[in-house]
Length: 288
Length: 243
Ligand SMILES: Nc1ncnc2c1ncn2[C@@H]1O[C@H](COP(=O)(O)OP(=O)(O)OP(=O)(O)O)[C@@H](O)[C@H]1O
Ligand SMILES: [Mg+2]
Image (cartoon, rainbow over all chains, first blue to last red; front, side):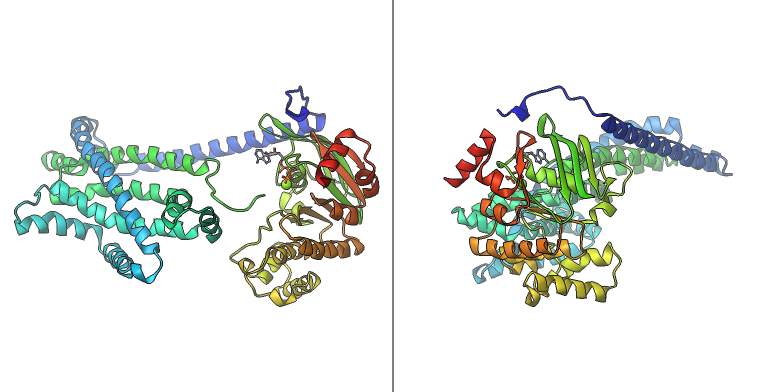
């Protein structure tokens, strides 16, 4: 242990104290400015809304407390389906998109068929509107009445989400893989790591870290898009809201569903932010 | 007047105090060489001068102006210095010429034609006139380092900070960079540089400072500090390097 590591008492010099005081004042001032401007903006929005001519009618059809109380348990039950879809499809997408991304980055003529398959697959599923894939698989395949295939719309809807999302996510992963500098591969190969081991232990960890914000973004989209399965009869949060609305002719159930979806996505968004700020996230680069 | 003066610089990372109390004066046209063990804080000191790190205490003055004052515009201060990094840090998406013209055009608002002229002169100076349109990745280490030096000096900075500019180079290339720095010094450029190369230190330094335990333990002309060090720790550091 060197002398510099020893704990010691350090008194900031007067000039440092002045600088610290100045920085504190600046921070306080920014805080006050931010608070005041937020309050002003919110106040203006509320006043415009509440004084608008249709406010009372609007409030009773979209924000009825009674309706919200009735709809909440139903929608919440439906939301569980969305969460299940998100989790199961999330894992399936992670695996399948990784396979696609790796196939696309394989070099050498031997792998041409695999590479070509990945390219065609991605082109196809990235081009098709998601709702169309959901209809094709969720309504089309059961209509074939092939024996031995599941008929549950949840299964086919989930498959549609997985196939479509994998195409997008594979492209994100590929961008990450290709952004890892060739010198990293060279260093790994020089240690005797095989192509696969280099990919697994050196390239992919860096690639995935780099594209993590984009991947989290896709996960949040997946959570929202799971509501598309309502279109083929899966009883999720949106479908439950629809059912309730058709009985009460009041739109509050939709608002409840919307609020619940937002409550799910906000923690995920904050987690993404936190993850992105973590030390060491920036991946490789030079030294400073 | 001194171009740079440091008084009582302190910098720590968490509980680890890297610089405890560093004071240093650099006169116009002087070349100061910092030596010290790996991890002794040489790079940290240069980063503090370049305002890439905020000091915990102490004052850095550039041409008499206190640049550690939180009210100064750090970008403006940095535009008056040049810094060369240990690992070059060239921008891989720009050509050699664009690397050099970026700051003149975007920071100093020089017309592109003029900036290009400056850049070509700087490249000429570092002996790479023929590489203007190459990509940094296509150059050798020594060539990249010389481009980095050209990039740092193209705006005629008041002060050049060089962080182990030779550590990644083979002896022949060290000679190349050394000649270049010697030339810059003769032109009156004020420089601070870190190095592990004592031969290099000896040939360019007006003053050598030995950094240890967060302070400058010993300083003086190169022959004195490197040839006949007074402090026991300096002696040990140097003898380990020679064997
Ligand atoms: N951003 C940082 N966070 C935490 N510790 C840091 C940081 N930067 C530097 N350090 C620590 O500060 C010390 C000094 O680092 P510095 O890079 O200045 O050393 P150096 O003298 O330049 O070494 P070398 O000769 O190897 O380049 C080291 O112990 C290092 O671990
Ligand atoms: Mg260093």
